[in-house]
Length: 361
Image (tube, rainbow, N blue to C red):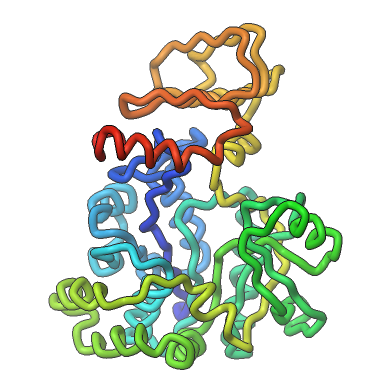
C-alpha cells in the first residue's frame, strides 16, 4: 500500500432531506440508513482502508459531531479528526485537510469524498481511486469522478468532457453544470458526453495547493498562516478562530470550475449519493408489492404498494390501502407524505423549526 496516499472524509452536513431520521444532532452520515449493520461514515472509512494506511485517513466534521466520529470510528486518533466551528461549505474544509496533510507529507496524493454516499461495487471503486491517485500524481492534474448517468436526473450536477485524454481513461473537463432542468438534463443524456458529478476528487497535495493559491488566495492565506500550529496542541483553537474569516464557497465553484487542469474519469461502481428518500427506495429490498420496508420483520401491509416505510426497531406497524407514500418515524416524529412530494421535506423542516424551534430538528 502506497504510504503517500491519503483520504479526507467530509462529514459536516446535517442531511435535512432525511428528516426526521436525520437530525442536526445526529445526521445521516452517522445512521445505518439502509439497515446494513454499519453507518454510512463507517462504510466510507472501511472503503478507504483499502486505499491508504489507517493513519492517513482524516475526517473533517463540525465540532458538535466530534464524539459521534470517535464513537463510530474508534481507530481514529484525535489528530485525524479535524473540526470546524461553523459551516463554510467545502472549499475551506478541503483546504484545512490538504494544508495539514502537506505539513506532514509534501508528496501526498489525496482523495476527497463525502461521508454519506453509497458504493455497491467496492472493488471497482478502489480500482478507480488507485488509478486516479496515480494519474493525478503523474500529471499534476485535478481529477474528479464522473458517474455514467442512467437517467436525466435533475438532482445531480453534470460534468461535460472532451476527447482530450490522459492515461487512456481521464478526459479533460469542458464544463460543470449545477442541477439542470429536466429538459436540459435530457439533452445532456442524449449528447453522450455528460456524467453525473459524484463530488469525489483526487489530486496531489502540490497541485491542489497551487490551485488554491491561484483561485482562492484569501483562503490560502488563512491556512498557510496556520502552518506553525499544525499537529500541535494549538491547532484546534487557532483553526477555530481563523475559520470565522473563511468565505462560504464550494470547492466546485471556487476551483474546479475555474482550473484548466481538471480531468474526469467515467465511472461505474454502483454509486448513489443517498440524497433523497427516493434514492433509499430505489436501493432498498422490496416486497412483492414494491414496498420498501425498514425493518422488514414488524411491518405488515394490506392492499398497499410502492411505499417507502422506515420505522424504529421493535415497533409494530400496520399499513392498509396505502400507495406511493413515504412513512417515516423517528425521534418522536412521524412523517407521512406522497412520494411524489419528497422534495418538499426541506420546507417541512423549515416550517417545523419556525413553529416549534429546534426541539424536533
